[in-house]
Image (cartoon, rainbow, N blue to C red; front, side, top):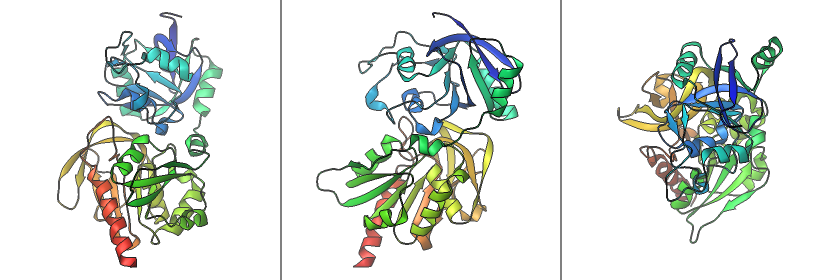
Length: 358
């Protein structure tokens, strides 16, 4: 299959010829791009890419190989992976195998030797669209399949189906993580701050959450349209104000919907490890890691953070409901640690709530 020709077919009928690596299957998904210069392992294993074909804008991918310890989740949920150039001979003392082997193991088709700069320009100009990776040139039937593709059941497909625990010696706090497609580093950041973490499936019931008598609830990241998660929104609506809540990415959007705000789909989203956000309270700028295609609609006065590029909502505070959220990823790895202080804010919120009950 070396240097086998492959076609990347866009919904608007544009076709890019490249070479295939990874799995030898035909695949259809929503095509997006990410601007991260590193962290491709975390990108590949981020559940928020469920149902999507991801383009890496950085021209060389795979140079430090695949390191399973850096996985954000056990598997890759993408529908395809597109790079300008792949590295066949990675060099890193932690490397376990190469990118091609990873994609084959995961059953994900890859495309290389395509003009990723032009692809990115198209998406920036016309917005995200569907695409297909195929061994064959496009036909009318294939274009119809691409046009009709929809991402469905995204959260249910990536959320854990069982309760999972991450306990540490001598914990100070007990946190419930509602798993909508959680990244491993959220748990790591909480563990570092002396939190035992119990992960519950996305469809955990209100009574189940409150019966744990935890110190706080973390609403995780995840894929898809936040408005699809009607039950989750209702559950959040019934727990806010009763326990401290911190939402990240999809968790931020679900919390906003539960509080009466709206969400919209962005033209091409924010994906990468170099997204600047502005703290609306003091004007400070933080460089953040992001991966989302939807944004909360709110007045600037209600936002705790705004995106410095397009001024969309990047964070919300709900002091009357002992809750707050960030659209970006303060747990980011690989990526900047500028915003990790939000976990400290969550710890203080739980401590203050605990003391107020005494």
